[in-house]
Image (cartoon, rainbow, N blue to C red):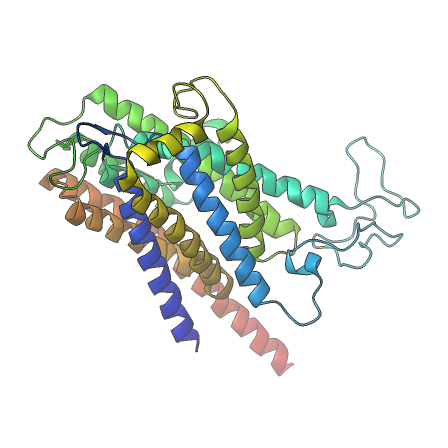
Length: 410
Protein backbone atom coordinates (compact mmCIF):
# COMPACT_ATOMS: atom_id res chain seq x y z
CA UNK A 1 0.00 0.00 0.00
CA UNK A 2 2.86 2.37 0.87
CA UNK A 3 4.51 1.75 -2.51
CA UNK A 4 1.21 2.44 -4.26
CA UNK A 5 0.81 5.68 -2.29
CA UNK A 6 4.40 6.69 -3.11
CA UNK A 7 3.82 5.96 -6.79
CA UNK A 8 0.67 8.09 -6.78
CA UNK A 9 2.49 10.93 -5.02
CA UNK A 10 5.43 10.85 -7.45
CA UNK A 11 3.12 10.64 -10.45
CA UNK A 12 0.95 13.45 -9.09
CA UNK A 13 3.86 15.82 -8.38
CA UNK A 14 5.48 15.12 -11.74
CA UNK A 15 2.36 15.40 -13.88
CA UNK A 16 0.86 18.44 -12.14
CA UNK A 17 4.02 20.54 -11.91
CA UNK A 18 5.30 19.66 -15.37
CA UNK A 19 1.97 20.90 -16.77
CA UNK A 20 2.16 23.87 -14.39
CA UNK A 21 5.63 24.77 -15.67
CA UNK A 22 4.47 24.65 -19.30
CA UNK A 23 1.59 26.99 -18.46
CA UNK A 24 3.83 29.37 -16.49
CA UNK A 25 6.29 29.71 -19.34
CA UNK A 26 3.47 30.23 -21.84
CA UNK A 27 2.06 33.03 -19.66
CA UNK A 28 5.41 34.83 -19.80
CA UNK A 29 5.39 35.35 -23.59
CA UNK A 30 3.15 37.51 -25.83
CA UNK A 31 -0.44 36.54 -26.70
CA UNK A 32 -2.09 37.40 -30.01
CA UNK A 33 -4.67 40.21 -29.91
CA UNK A 34 -8.21 39.23 -30.88
CA UNK A 35 -7.97 41.36 -34.03
CA UNK A 36 -4.78 39.56 -35.06
CA UNK A 37 -2.79 42.76 -35.61
CA UNK A 38 -0.57 42.74 -32.52
CA UNK A 39 0.57 40.70 -29.53
CA UNK A 40 1.20 41.70 -25.91
CA UNK A 41 2.47 40.09 -22.73
CA UNK A 42 0.21 39.26 -19.81
CA UNK A 43 1.51 41.50 -17.00
CA UNK A 44 -0.77 40.60 -14.09
CA UNK A 45 1.15 38.27 -11.74
CA UNK A 46 -1.15 39.10 -8.81
CA UNK A 47 -4.18 37.99 -10.82
CA UNK A 48 -2.38 34.72 -11.63
CA UNK A 49 -1.60 34.27 -7.95
CA UNK A 50 -5.19 34.99 -6.93
CA UNK A 51 -6.55 32.35 -9.31
CA UNK A 52 -4.08 29.73 -8.11
CA UNK A 53 -4.41 30.44 -4.38
CA UNK A 54 -8.22 30.39 -4.58
CA UNK A 55 -8.26 26.96 -6.23
CA UNK A 56 -5.54 25.75 -3.82
CA UNK A 57 -7.59 26.80 -0.78
CA UNK A 58 -10.66 25.10 -2.23
CA UNK A 59 -8.72 21.91 -2.99
CA UNK A 60 -7.24 21.82 0.53
CA UNK A 61 -10.65 22.40 2.12
CA UNK A 62 -12.20 19.55 0.16
CA UNK A 63 -9.28 17.29 1.05
CA UNK A 64 -9.37 17.88 4.81
CA UNK A 65 -13.19 17.67 4.84
CA UNK A 66 -13.21 14.31 3.06
CA UNK A 67 -10.39 12.99 5.30
CA UNK A 68 -11.94 14.24 8.55
CA UNK A 69 -12.37 11.90 11.51
CA UNK A 70 -15.80 11.20 13.01
CA UNK A 71 -16.79 13.65 15.74
CA UNK A 72 -14.31 16.36 14.82
CA UNK A 73 -15.47 19.95 15.27
CA UNK A 74 -15.08 22.58 12.55
CA UNK A 75 -12.21 24.16 14.47
CA UNK A 76 -10.41 20.84 14.67
CA UNK A 77 -10.95 20.14 10.97
CA UNK A 78 -9.43 23.52 10.09
CA UNK A 79 -6.52 23.10 12.52
CA UNK A 80 -7.68 25.75 15.00
CA UNK A 81 -8.01 25.51 18.76
CA UNK A 82 -11.42 25.34 20.38
CA UNK A 83 -10.47 27.64 23.25
CA UNK A 84 -7.52 29.78 24.34
CA UNK A 85 -5.06 27.81 26.44
CA UNK A 86 -3.45 29.16 29.61
CA UNK A 87 -0.49 27.91 31.52
CA UNK A 88 -1.46 26.26 34.77
CA UNK A 89 0.60 26.30 38.00
CA UNK A 90 2.57 23.25 36.85
CA UNK A 91 3.53 25.08 33.64
CA UNK A 92 1.61 22.97 31.11
CA UNK A 93 -1.03 24.36 28.79
CA UNK A 94 -4.63 23.55 29.74
CA UNK A 95 -6.08 20.88 27.47
CA UNK A 96 -2.88 20.34 25.53
CA UNK A 97 0.64 19.28 26.41
CA UNK A 98 3.46 21.74 25.83
CA UNK A 99 5.68 20.97 22.88
CA UNK A 100 8.79 22.63 24.22
CA UNK A 101 8.49 21.58 27.83
CA UNK A 102 7.23 23.21 30.99
CA UNK A 103 7.09 26.95 31.16
CA UNK A 104 7.66 26.84 34.92
CA UNK A 105 11.02 28.22 35.92
CA UNK A 106 11.97 29.71 32.56
CA UNK A 107 13.51 33.17 32.77
CA UNK A 108 11.56 36.02 31.22
CA UNK A 109 13.03 38.71 29.01
CA UNK A 110 12.58 41.37 31.68
CA UNK A 111 14.73 39.47 34.13
CA UNK A 112 12.30 37.96 36.66
CA UNK A 113 11.37 34.31 36.74
CA UNK A 114 7.94 32.88 36.02
CA UNK A 115 6.47 31.78 39.35
CA UNK A 116 4.12 28.82 39.79
CA UNK A 117 1.28 31.15 40.83
CA UNK A 118 1.20 33.16 37.57
CA UNK A 119 -1.31 32.28 34.87
CA UNK A 120 -0.21 33.50 31.48
CA UNK A 121 -1.68 32.88 28.06
CA UNK A 122 0.49 30.48 26.07
CA UNK A 123 0.71 31.82 22.52
CA UNK A 124 2.00 28.44 21.30
CA UNK A 125 -1.62 27.26 21.43
CA UNK A 126 -3.29 30.54 20.57
CA UNK A 127 -5.47 30.70 17.45
CA UNK A 128 -4.69 34.37 16.90
CA UNK A 129 -0.93 33.86 16.87
CA UNK A 130 -1.31 30.86 14.54
CA UNK A 131 -3.38 32.88 12.07
CA UNK A 132 -0.82 35.69 12.21
CA UNK A 133 1.88 33.18 11.25
CA UNK A 134 -0.24 32.06 8.31
CA UNK A 135 -0.72 35.70 7.31
CA UNK A 136 3.04 36.22 7.48
CA UNK A 137 3.56 33.32 5.06
CA UNK A 138 0.88 34.74 2.75
CA UNK A 139 2.56 38.17 2.67
CA UNK A 140 5.91 36.58 1.80
CA UNK A 141 4.44 34.34 -0.91
CA UNK A 142 2.47 37.21 -2.45
CA UNK A 143 5.63 39.35 -2.48
CA UNK A 144 7.86 36.63 -3.94
CA UNK A 145 5.72 35.51 -6.89
CA UNK A 146 5.94 38.75 -8.97
CA UNK A 147 9.74 38.70 -8.81
CA UNK A 148 9.88 35.15 -10.17
CA UNK A 149 7.48 36.06 -12.98
CA UNK A 150 9.37 39.27 -13.78
CA UNK A 151 12.67 37.38 -14.02
CA UNK A 152 11.34 35.56 -17.10
CA UNK A 153 11.49 38.83 -19.05
CA UNK A 154 15.28 38.86 -18.65
CA UNK A 155 16.37 35.21 -18.43
CA UNK A 156 15.12 32.07 -20.16
CA UNK A 157 12.84 29.60 -18.42
CA UNK A 158 15.48 26.82 -18.25
CA UNK A 159 17.80 29.32 -16.54
CA UNK A 160 15.09 30.18 -14.02
CA UNK A 161 14.38 26.51 -13.27
CA UNK A 162 18.09 25.97 -12.73
CA UNK A 163 18.28 28.95 -10.39
CA UNK A 164 15.17 27.85 -8.45
CA UNK A 165 16.90 24.52 -7.80
CA UNK A 166 19.62 26.33 -5.82
CA UNK A 167 17.89 27.78 -2.77
CA UNK A 168 20.75 26.54 -0.59
CA UNK A 169 23.25 28.99 -2.12
CA UNK A 170 21.83 32.42 -1.10
CA UNK A 171 20.78 31.08 2.31
CA UNK A 172 24.22 29.67 3.04
CA UNK A 173 26.07 32.76 1.77
CA UNK A 174 23.97 35.07 3.97
CA UNK A 175 24.59 32.85 7.01
CA UNK A 176 28.34 32.95 6.46
CA UNK A 177 28.51 36.71 5.78
CA UNK A 178 26.08 37.91 8.44
CA UNK A 179 26.40 35.37 11.25
CA UNK A 180 29.82 33.77 10.59
CA UNK A 181 28.29 30.32 10.81
CA UNK A 182 30.22 27.26 9.73
CA UNK A 183 28.88 24.38 7.67
CA UNK A 184 29.93 20.85 6.83
CA UNK A 185 32.64 20.59 4.18
CA UNK A 186 30.37 18.99 1.61
CA UNK A 187 28.08 22.06 1.70
CA UNK A 188 30.91 24.31 0.52
CA UNK A 189 31.53 21.81 -2.29
CA UNK A 190 27.84 21.92 -3.22
CA UNK A 191 27.79 25.73 -3.26
CA UNK A 192 30.96 25.84 -5.39
CA UNK A 193 29.51 23.36 -7.90
CA UNK A 194 26.17 25.15 -8.09
CA UNK A 195 27.83 28.55 -8.52
CA UNK A 196 30.13 27.19 -11.25
CA UNK A 197 27.23 25.50 -13.02
CA UNK A 198 25.03 28.62 -13.05
CA UNK A 199 27.99 30.73 -14.26
CA UNK A 200 28.57 28.31 -17.14
CA UNK A 201 24.87 28.19 -18.00
CA UNK A 202 24.45 31.97 -18.05
CA UNK A 203 27.81 32.65 -19.69
CA UNK A 204 27.27 30.28 -22.62
CA UNK A 205 23.64 31.28 -23.20
CA UNK A 206 22.83 32.72 -26.63
CA UNK A 207 19.03 32.70 -26.56
CA UNK A 208 16.79 35.64 -25.72
CA UNK A 209 14.29 35.29 -22.86
CA UNK A 210 10.54 35.36 -23.34
CA UNK A 211 10.53 32.85 -26.18
CA UNK A 212 7.21 31.23 -27.13
CA UNK A 213 6.28 28.19 -29.16
CA UNK A 214 7.59 28.06 -32.70
CA UNK A 215 5.54 30.37 -34.87
CA UNK A 216 4.03 32.23 -31.90
CA UNK A 217 6.96 33.71 -30.08
CA UNK A 218 9.25 36.64 -30.15
CA UNK A 219 12.84 35.49 -30.11
CA UNK A 220 14.34 32.97 -32.45
CA UNK A 221 17.07 30.52 -31.64
CA UNK A 222 19.56 32.19 -33.87
CA UNK A 223 19.19 35.66 -32.45
CA UNK A 224 21.76 37.27 -30.22
CA UNK A 225 21.42 36.48 -26.54
CA UNK A 226 20.46 38.91 -23.79
CA UNK A 227 22.96 41.52 -22.65
CA UNK A 228 24.94 41.14 -19.45
CA UNK A 229 22.90 43.97 -17.92
CA UNK A 230 19.60 42.21 -18.71
CA UNK A 231 20.89 38.95 -17.26
CA UNK A 232 21.98 40.80 -14.12
CA UNK A 233 18.45 42.20 -13.68
CA UNK A 234 16.93 38.77 -14.18
CA UNK A 235 19.32 37.11 -11.72
CA UNK A 236 18.63 39.88 -9.17
CA UNK A 237 14.87 39.32 -9.43
CA UNK A 238 15.43 35.58 -9.09
CA UNK A 239 17.64 36.01 -6.01
CA UNK A 240 14.98 38.20 -4.37
CA UNK A 241 12.43 35.50 -5.12
CA UNK A 242 14.67 32.81 -3.62
CA UNK A 243 15.43 34.82 -0.47
CA UNK A 244 11.74 35.50 0.18
CA UNK A 245 10.99 31.80 -0.48
CA UNK A 246 13.63 30.94 2.13
CA UNK A 247 11.93 33.20 4.67
CA UNK A 248 8.61 31.53 3.83
CA UNK A 249 10.04 28.05 4.39
CA UNK A 250 11.51 29.12 7.73
CA UNK A 251 8.14 30.47 8.87
CA UNK A 252 6.41 27.25 7.84
CA UNK A 253 8.97 25.24 9.82
CA UNK A 254 8.22 27.46 12.82
CA UNK A 255 4.49 26.77 12.47
CA UNK A 256 5.05 23.01 12.36
CA UNK A 257 7.32 23.22 15.41
CA UNK A 258 4.96 25.33 17.54
CA UNK A 259 1.52 24.14 16.48
CA UNK A 260 0.01 20.74 15.87
CA UNK A 261 -1.34 21.25 12.35
CA UNK A 262 -1.29 19.14 9.21
CA UNK A 263 0.18 20.16 5.90
CA UNK A 264 -3.24 20.41 4.29
CA UNK A 265 -4.51 22.70 7.07
CA UNK A 266 -1.52 24.95 6.56
CA UNK A 267 -2.09 24.86 2.80
CA UNK A 268 -5.73 25.91 3.29
CA UNK A 269 -5.09 28.87 5.57
CA UNK A 270 -2.05 30.23 3.74
CA UNK A 271 -3.92 30.13 0.44
CA UNK A 272 -6.99 31.76 2.01
CA UNK A 273 -4.83 34.65 3.17
CA UNK A 274 -2.99 34.76 -0.17
CA UNK A 275 -6.31 34.99 -2.01
CA UNK A 276 -7.62 37.76 0.24
CA UNK A 277 -4.36 39.70 0.13
CA UNK A 278 -3.75 39.50 -3.63
CA UNK A 279 -7.42 40.19 -4.41
CA UNK A 280 -7.40 43.27 -2.18
CA UNK A 281 -4.24 44.61 -3.82
CA UNK A 282 -5.64 43.86 -7.28
CA UNK A 283 -8.69 46.08 -6.79
CA UNK A 284 -6.80 49.03 -5.30
CA UNK A 285 -5.99 51.88 -7.74
CA UNK A 286 -2.27 51.76 -6.96
CA UNK A 287 0.32 53.69 -8.99
CA UNK A 288 2.75 51.90 -11.25
CA UNK A 289 5.30 49.96 -9.21
CA UNK A 290 7.91 47.94 -11.12
CA UNK A 291 7.47 44.17 -10.66
CA UNK A 292 4.94 44.41 -7.80
CA UNK A 293 2.23 46.43 -9.61
CA UNK A 294 3.02 46.60 -13.33
CA UNK A 295 -0.40 47.96 -14.37
CA UNK A 296 0.22 51.39 -15.94
CA UNK A 297 -3.09 52.82 -14.73
CA UNK A 298 -6.22 51.75 -12.89
CA UNK A 299 -6.35 48.45 -11.01
CA UNK A 300 -4.52 45.24 -11.81
CA UNK A 301 -7.81 43.33 -11.80
CA UNK A 302 -9.23 45.71 -14.39
CA UNK A 303 -6.11 45.40 -16.53
CA UNK A 304 -6.16 41.59 -16.27
CA UNK A 305 -9.84 41.29 -17.23
CA UNK A 306 -9.35 43.72 -20.11
CA UNK A 307 -6.40 41.62 -21.33
CA UNK A 308 -8.49 38.44 -21.14
CA UNK A 309 -11.25 40.09 -23.23
CA UNK A 310 -8.85 41.21 -25.95
CA UNK A 311 -6.57 38.14 -25.79
CA UNK A 312 -8.89 35.13 -25.21
CA UNK A 313 -6.05 32.67 -25.87
CA UNK A 314 -4.68 33.47 -22.39
CA UNK A 315 -7.63 31.72 -20.69
CA UNK A 316 -6.36 28.18 -21.35
CA UNK A 317 -2.83 28.62 -19.93
CA UNK A 318 -4.20 30.64 -17.00
CA UNK A 319 -6.69 27.90 -16.06
CA UNK A 320 -3.98 25.25 -16.48
CA UNK A 321 -1.60 27.24 -14.29
CA UNK A 322 -4.14 27.65 -11.46
CA UNK A 323 -5.60 24.13 -11.52
CA UNK A 324 -2.34 22.18 -11.79
CA UNK A 325 -0.72 24.38 -9.13
CA UNK A 326 -3.58 23.65 -6.71
CA UNK A 327 -3.57 19.89 -7.30
CA UNK A 328 0.23 19.77 -7.24
CA UNK A 329 0.30 21.31 -3.76
CA UNK A 330 -1.97 18.52 -2.50
CA UNK A 331 0.44 15.86 -3.76
CA UNK A 332 3.39 17.72 -2.21
CA UNK A 333 1.78 17.88 1.24
CA UNK A 334 0.65 14.25 0.95
CA UNK A 335 4.24 13.21 0.18
CA UNK A 336 5.59 15.31 3.06
CA UNK A 337 3.09 13.82 5.52
CA UNK A 338 3.65 10.14 4.66
CA UNK A 339 7.23 9.93 3.37
CA UNK A 340 9.12 12.88 4.85
CA UNK A 341 11.12 15.79 3.50
CA UNK A 342 14.01 13.74 2.07
CA UNK A 343 11.73 11.83 -0.28
CA UNK A 344 10.08 15.12 -1.25
CA UNK A 345 13.47 16.74 -1.94
CA UNK A 346 14.41 13.83 -4.21
CA UNK A 347 11.12 14.07 -6.10
CA UNK A 348 11.24 17.85 -6.53
CA UNK A 349 14.92 17.76 -7.56
CA UNK A 350 14.31 15.28 -10.37
CA UNK A 351 11.06 17.08 -11.26
CA UNK A 352 12.97 20.33 -11.86
CA UNK A 353 15.42 18.49 -14.08
CA UNK A 354 12.57 17.09 -16.16
CA UNK A 355 10.88 20.53 -16.14
CA UNK A 356 13.95 22.05 -17.75
CA UNK A 357 14.18 19.26 -20.31
CA UNK A 358 10.46 19.51 -21.09
CA UNK A 359 10.77 23.26 -21.57
CA UNK A 360 13.61 22.70 -24.03
CA UNK A 361 11.50 20.21 -26.02
CA UNK A 362 8.09 21.97 -25.92
CA UNK A 363 9.33 25.53 -26.55
CA UNK A 364 12.29 24.58 -28.75
CA UNK A 365 14.95 26.24 -26.61
CA UNK A 366 18.45 25.88 -28.01
CA UNK A 367 21.01 25.12 -25.31
CA UNK A 368 24.70 25.26 -26.12
CA UNK A 369 27.07 22.47 -25.02
CA UNK A 370 28.40 24.83 -22.36
CA UNK A 371 24.87 25.27 -20.96
CA UNK A 372 24.30 21.52 -20.84
CA UNK A 373 27.60 21.20 -18.95
CA UNK A 374 26.53 23.93 -16.52
CA UNK A 375 23.17 22.24 -15.89
CA UNK A 376 24.91 18.91 -15.29
CA UNK A 377 27.28 20.51 -12.75
CA UNK A 378 24.38 22.15 -10.89
CA UNK A 379 22.31 18.98 -10.62
CA UNK A 380 25.40 16.98 -9.67
CA UNK A 381 26.05 19.42 -6.81
CA UNK A 382 22.46 19.25 -5.57
CA UNK A 383 22.56 15.45 -5.83
CA UNK A 384 25.61 15.40 -3.54
CA UNK A 385 23.63 17.38 -0.95
CA UNK A 386 20.62 15.04 -1.21
CA UNK A 387 22.84 11.93 -0.99
CA UNK A 388 24.65 13.16 2.14
CA UNK A 389 21.35 14.03 3.83
CA UNK A 390 19.92 10.61 3.06
CA UNK A 391 23.07 8.89 4.34
CA UNK A 392 22.99 10.87 7.60
CA UNK A 393 19.32 10.13 8.21
CA UNK A 394 19.86 6.43 7.50
CA UNK A 395 22.76 6.34 9.98
CA UNK A 396 20.59 7.97 12.66
CA UNK A 397 17.82 5.44 12.06
CA UNK A 398 20.27 2.55 12.42
CA UNK A 399 21.47 3.97 15.76
CA UNK A 400 17.88 4.44 16.95
CA UNK A 401 16.95 0.86 16.00
CA UNK A 402 19.99 -0.49 17.84
CA UNK A 403 19.09 1.57 20.90
CA UNK A 404 15.50 0.29 20.83
CA UNK A 405 16.76 -3.30 20.52
CA UNK A 406 19.13 -2.81 23.48
CA UNK A 407 16.38 -1.35 25.67
CA UNK A 408 14.00 -4.17 24.71
CA UNK A 409 16.69 -6.73 25.60
CA UNK A 410 17.02 -5.22 29.07
